[in-house]
Image 1 (cartoon, one colour):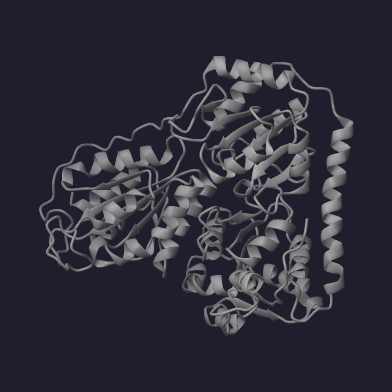
Image 2 (image 1 turned 45 degrees about the horizontal axis):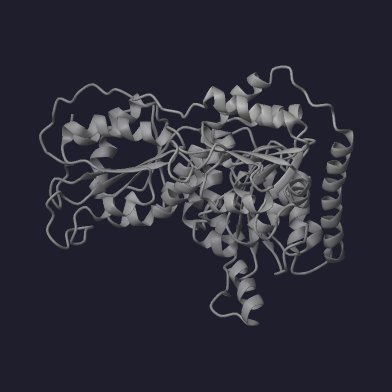
Length: 555
């Protein structure tokens, strides 16, 4: 084999089905190797940031490592945002890149003075970064990369393979080599200690009004059913971090909304005021979301089951442990045995009334704006809820659209409202939607973005057409980076550098082979969305909605 074939062989052995990439001369040998692996489909992107964003989306949606390949230097740097995002989102990813030669000259092609500069940069945003220096190490390094990406708290890893010389067509060496047989490494998970599970179970049964705080670890480890069952057994409201929206459906009797520093759900606030014990599962010690939870939880009555590879100095005391969320919940349910707290009709009724009150408040806030031009964002949100069923996937970009959708969107599954997460990388919506449609071709898939965010990702609109990813793209056009525009206005009383003139996105869509619809009248929004969804039976579609800038709704 040559080095590119060795990489392709490793991906085949790991069962990889898709590779997201932008080509470049430093990774030609990997492309050559992949060309002979028929079980892997290459998705050729047009913008390098979208390569890692797509790999992140694949990891979130499937639980398997998303694989992306980029060229050296600019290819790596341009794709860093999605890698850091995957780290924050606990999304498994294997990020593979070319690199300058091991002993590159200063100012080498795609290089700077230090040949290993990319490797060093990726160390801080990945679980593991490796720079391969011998061809015979490729199988072992690839196996370790997949092992680390999937084990414990999943996340991204980076592997770089130096070129033989500045303009060589080979990686590492020209001569083929006989390499050791590829051996995958089983994943590792943190198992809960039976004595801890027993102790926590007794405290939960003795508590007066327990609350479960859920983190994204429950989504990543597919423990939604176990969470729901535990909530019903304990008659416990479920609150969740804002990046774990979808961990429990809104229609669940104990859905209590998300916690966030400024905009926590009213049911969440009430549940945490009344509780005498919080069980947090799928969150990490030391994170901003846990700090927020601690400020609201009863003092010294918070049990944390951390979502990490293993315990470290951040986990202190008897009430802080690290365990795989699904293993812990399964073990806890077994320990509870036949225990079932009596049905709390008063609590269930109060929570149902609270959810209804939030929906009624949102409708009342929208009512005066039904005829507004430009269109009030709440009208679009109402139309989306009317048009989309519970099975639809909505991938929201960063900005005002995210804040409006987070408030209005009806939540049934983790895919009901997908968002970047704490990293908040703009240009998230379209690449995530493309991946979602390729993985779930039978579901309606919507990408939601403001005009500023969409301009950062627009280059892969033709990619959706090319690969038959018939998504519905909804663009909120207000001629501004809307969120920063509002922030400047609120802080300083004026704006600077945040407004611009957007193009006619519907016409651009048509030029890309996408159905393009522009809406200026609020009466036509719902019909336009239905027309767009109908068009996605044959090709991607875009609905451009000319919206006004408004303060976010109050909940």
